[in-house]
Length: 210
Image (cartoon, rainbow, N blue to C red):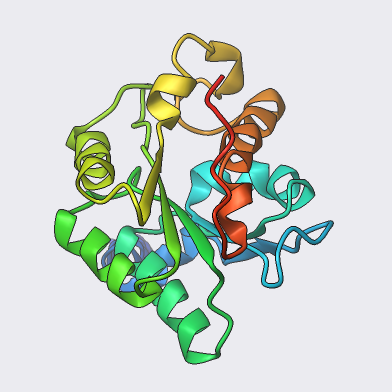
């Protein structure tokens, strides 16, 4: 075999190995992007409500800030990472009266994880849970897990059924049926705005559904 050809083949093999290694190491998660945040544009509570999401929330960050949320999203985020965001807020004494999770598109959501979120929030705060759409626009068992949690603890857990709310609105989504368009981002913020009355301690009730 020609020496130059052999050298080229070795170099190609090494390059391929490097690509495969990157795909199997934590560094591959860099493709998901970093954490993106938005601060509320006006004060709705002594401590602004917190919205925690994944890539399906990214385009809605400005709209959520306009309705009063402090929003925090990252591509590929799973529920476990969302719990970490919540724990960090508690650890630094920044835990709001209302926190909303819009997670589940990237991995499953369990009743145990929801129970952990409730424990972090404590007995007096409110936890909002958004039912997740899946790629293609449908729903998985995660949506029913979230609805069930809301039925079992309606005092502390408030369910925002994004799956039902967004049904029939193809223009709200990119071709994958999951990620938002600009009109979808506004609609998503309108839905989460329904829980804003719960951002302050008291007896206020969420706005009625459309």
